[in-house]
Length: 93
Image (cartoon, rainbow, N blue to C red; front, side, top):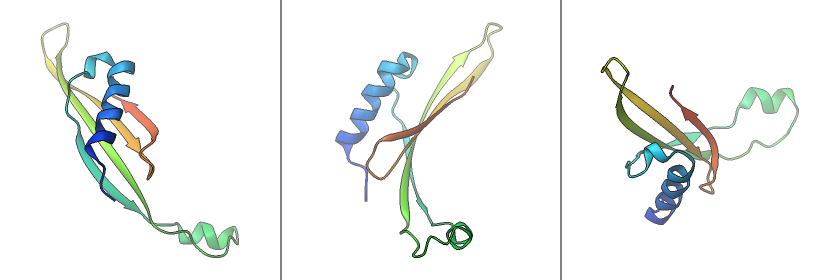
């Protein structure tokens, strides 16, 4: 399932609200297929394995200058589930 432009815009608005320094930054989008962990299902005797899941990552990158004028990348990674809801946000320092 591909992520639609409207969903990307909704996430960008949320990120701009919570992290204003990333407002107007266009994210790089990647999709990953996650397989069920066979060993865990067997160990917990859960029976039939679940299907493959898709997660999406939006990577917002911005170059900022430190106090001593050294440019560094500031990165914000947003992970979305199959319903395009934010499940995790990771921010560089």
